[in-house]
Figure 1: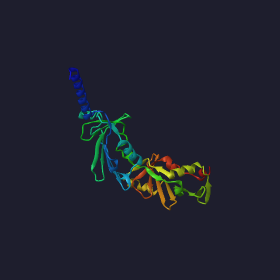
Figure 2: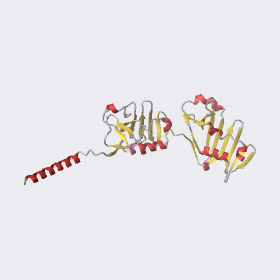
Figure 3: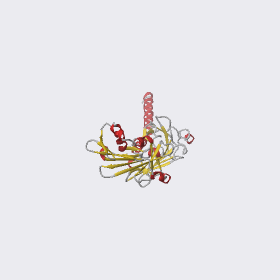
Figure 4: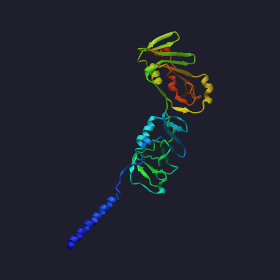
Length: 308
């Protein structure tokens, strides 16, 4: 073999070796799932910051807040957590591997939000810290106990704040109009009933009765509130503070349902400013619900309002 051929063979051998090394040590950037956990196994979620801790548990009632109170969660928040947070992708290459960078990327223990996921037996499935980000396109995160920091390809930092208000289901009423058979309203010395018939709603007050036009605005407003009513806030463990006020309520609302059940709502003024009201549902003393004044005032109507 002549010298020229030997050189060619040598170059070919070097290229083969380089190819093998490249294949063996593939540093090509890839997209990976940051959490890398089987979502079907998740039964407990803990969200922890320096200020707050929120514990969510999936039990026979579905996803519930378990700490700091026990209450139903907002379904949308749970759906977003599983669809957006747990599916967050990142580059396989970290943006930093320095502990000194934790504060820069908001992933230190004091600046980030710790997300801990457990299975039914309370085995830890994932433990990460995600930093708050003002950039709409990304947020930063790291596995707890590791120094590698990754940039998530979406900003999920707003989807899991341990803020109990945003996770708490605010629903008070969720009914269909055909569930309602009678609405009775009482305020001061005044009161009236709205009774569902086969065609129209009938207004009754004392000996006065008449059918209300289907397009009547007052009727529509009342029906809409009775079908769907949400709290603007909650009052926990303070019924004794307001107990005497509930003995002389501002307004009472009783809903008779088609299945024979009754729902009784009692309203009192929150404070002297008169722009907020407190609602007690049936005999439930905890929590109490906070509502805006305009909702309560929609029920304080007279015969004339229903004749328009």
